[in-house]
Length: 337
Length: 221
Image (cartoon, rainbow over all chains, first blue to last red; front, top):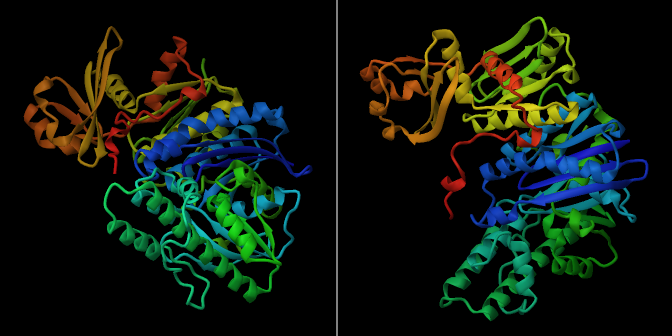
């Protein structure tokens, strides 16, 4: 089966063509609007939707031409149905459905987080069900037990800010640009992670939930005591300490979850999974556990993950859509059969 | 004879029309916030009634706004996808011109101003002048309601659109005719027939929403 995957849930336009027989992405393109939103210090939903309309068709054309496939060789279309920003989601949904009408090919809407989880199936070394998943991005922080495709148990999630959101907010406090993740990671390399004793939120609690807003506030209080302008050394030290607190929290939560479920495989996904320091801390802190990281370019939102998830969804619910459906709020466990 | 699909979803009325060699089939209903959930069925139904496949069409015409941001993005992306997949050209028309067209045909009015509620205390204003059986000039802008003044209009101007209700007192004082009205895809059809004759078609990449308001209203935080 050859599937066209379209991802437009937030500020990235991702398009990919997936060949399920070869389990290979034939071509893919991602356009990130980050530079546009950097001017505003975060994603502006209306502007994100406007850019999606501008970019989607040219990216679909480019991806098709790079793959060397013609439209009649495509078997189906998959798009992100949710969760995400409603305006951005609607652009991908209506475009995918109109291709489906015009080409007379089936179309399926996939769950964005399931797509992040399943993208690891593209790697040469891929996990076997069941496994534990940690999804960490600007919009989500989730610990999930994946029993099989379409069967997920949410074990823990954030009670306030998502991890990536905390990175963005701390970067803003330190006067750095959006998106904050790469900025913090870069400057933290020059800092000492033990220079400030920041809280490890929720670690004393028995459940598997997360909370990052207190950690962000703790950074704010340290910064408030400093004279402006903040020195480079200070920024490096506080960024390194913050990153270490996040990493330790993630490691400890994964440890507890693995202990609870008895899983030996851990799949990491989402934009924060591209942070090399976090990757190293997870690998070091969870010895004996088989950890799977997606290819760096597939940590952030992309069309490849949607195409792969679409393929697996087709086995369950192949159909021509009756209506253009989006679900801006959509719990992963609602997918369960 | 040309075969045209016209999509106009910039207002709370979902309006779609299909013109075949022999007839026009259309849908025009007030269905606030249900456009995206119903439009696929509406499209399929009208094409079926017209005995047409998308590939049989000559062109797809779209009311690109201004109007509801969600509505105009829906119309544009749907038409982009249909046009690309069926290899059809498109015609991009202002939704305010679609309103004016209705009263130009129906009332033979030559000076028409379309007023559409832009929300957040603003109003879209589209001025259209017709001469020698054709649109002679047009002007689009977005205004704060309190900045809308009738002194720049003559009493022979015909006002139309759901924005009339926002400036009711001023229109009444001017003594002008005004009509509450949502753009109709049948009027979009007649505009596109003329444009098609003149060869004024575009490729789907050019089919972008017409917001009138730019990005400047999103202030830096």
